Image 1 (cartoon, rainbow, N blue to C red):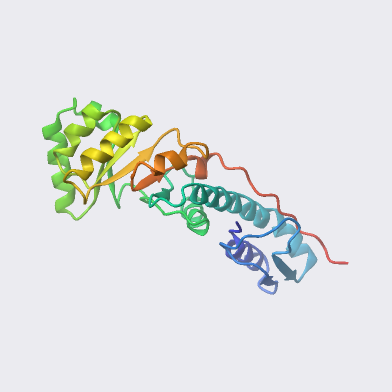
Image 2: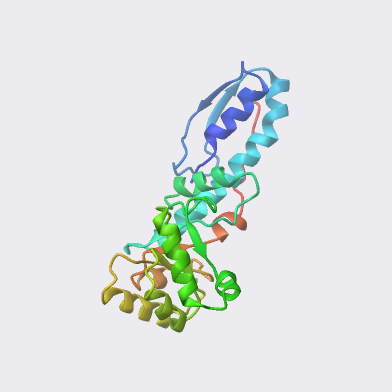
Length: 236
C-alpha cells in the first residue's frame, strides 16, 4: 500500500527546484512488485544526492500503510476501527499518522493537547481515588476535551464506568473480559466508546473486533513496522 509520494516529491524539489517529479501511482494505492511509481527528470547530481532521503520516506511510510491495510482487512466485517498510537518516530508523527490513514486506518490523538488519556500510572499516582479521577474527567470535559481512561481489569472497568469518560481503554485484557466489558457498556452506556490496546496482532485482531469494541489501537503500526524496499534506477 503506497505512501510517501508527495514527501518524496518535496525532497527532490527542495534539492533542486528544476527537478520534475511525475507520480505514476498515488498514496493509498495498492502496488505490485517491480511497479514503477514515479518518473523523475532533472540534474543527475541533484537527483542522486536526494535519492536516499526520498526512498527512506517512501520505504517507511509505505511499510506503515501496508501493515495498516493488513489489519483493516483482517477485521472485516466488524465495525471496529484500526487506530494508531503516539508510539511514533520523533519528528515524524504527522507523516506516520498520514501513512496509517493511507492504509485505511484511523488516527488517534496527536498529543497531550487534543485528548486526555488517564493511564495506569496516573491512576496509581492518584492512589486509585476514583473521586479524584471523576474530578479530572469533569475538568477536561468542561474545556471540551475528550477524556479516555485506561483500565486493566473488570474491577477497574466497573469503577470507571460510573464516572462518565468518553472512552475506556481495555489494556491487555483477555477476550472473555473484553466481551464482559462490552456487555456492561451495552446495558445503558451506548455513547461510551471502548478501545482495546495491548497484545494485538494479525492472528487475534479479528476475534477482538468480533466482541463489539469500537476501536483497536496498535502501536506496532508505527514503532516496529517493516519497511518496503524501493529503488531508484537511471533509465538507459
